[in-house]
Length: 196
Image (tube, rainbow, N blue to C red; front, top):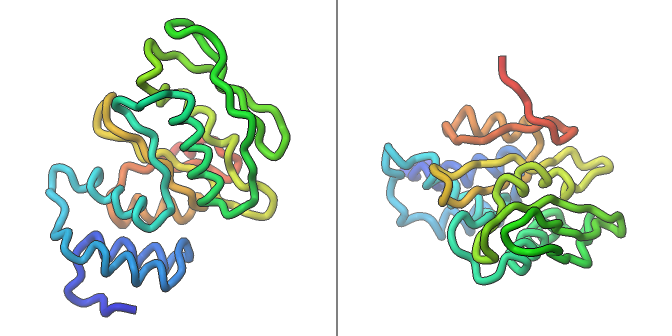
């Protein structure tokens, strides 16, 4: 692995993802080289800028807070990213956004053949319902013996992108504490963990 001396914060995060068992050594090495010229995160935007490393290392998916071309396709893209990150433990099919724009709608889909539905509230097909994604994301977890769940890494404001980190609760808490990331840690059951 690339020597850790002289690494920027972005690179140290990539290395830590490997140390926590979230990515392979090869992926960490590739990521460290890719982000070598990123410098240091701006102090006021540190948490937001570090989320880019999570995406580069393929441990987080992105939910767009701003304009998308077509909402149904954007939701399907989130599902495709989840499938890819999980590595075949889930298959998401039959994605269909039902109902009229401006009224509550249903985002229907199947996970490994099981019917799921998210209630979507949006005034336009150009935007996603980030609240519905956060509420329903636990439908996309690997399950079985895999303890990973999706933890929300919220954007700075209503129009900012949210990210979803696929990690065990312990891994998510470690990254939150060590890198001061705004990670909403969930338990292995997918329910939010309330810190004392």
